[in-house]
Image (cartoon, rainbow, N blue to C red; front, side, top):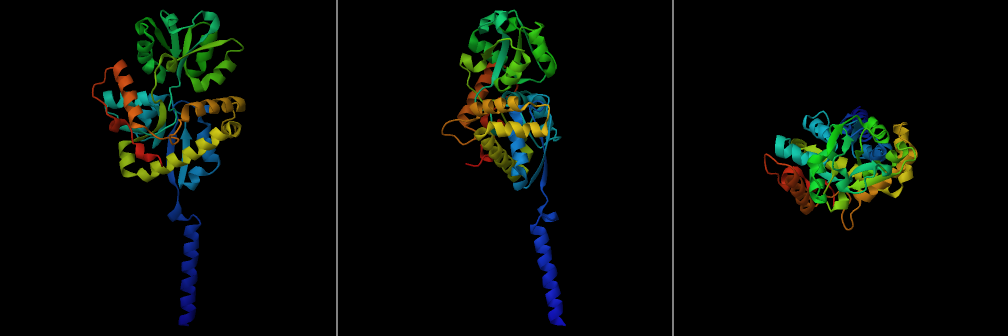
Length: 328
């Protein structure tokens, strides 16, 4: 009798261990809401590569990707904890910390090089930064482009006060450019393929912020001070899984484009492929780990922003970045 009871207890215990190891309640994934910088575009394909290939699942994460309305919006959503993690421009993080004490930091870099640019039609006659004076540039309300424009104007030695910025919905921007309602529009270089398609054959001119010598960090993954402090493992797992997706996307942009289209049919495969290739050009830095944060470049970014905008409170490298979230 004792032998039978011992066998039953052993069998029940074994079944329980098997259940838990197979993904029972004890192995439930951590739910994470991730907000993009703006909308769902081909440039976001690597997040969906990580999702589609199970990299987030492998990391014990149940990730929901939601649409953002600009970098400033993503910073606010993460700060308000409507999203645990997000994707935002470094300028928005610096200005948020320096002027509004928003406790958000960069935990991984994706756009390690500046993607900011102003696009104009070639037949507008605008060929150089000086030609922007007296002209209208349209962009969305929460875009990082206007926030960085003073730094661009200073580097290009033009009078930024002579340029008028107009606010418009993202889907209206190409039409405003084509119809001459604005002489230029703000756009990241990763969105050039989509803009060319919308231009309907008209030739575009790109005035990139990097072309006037600006070199700074742009978009990266963000989290709050509290999340970094209380749940660093979750942040590290999300970053590591995303970097796996980014590596795959860089190696095979066409596959990434197809995966993005699978989740968002409105995103053209070819456009997503081209945007992913453009992301690769920004993300890969020789002799640096993908996603890593270099404190010296963070300081350089702070200096550029502080030189263009007054900050109510000085911002340090430690205030806006947590470099140890990226595995070396």
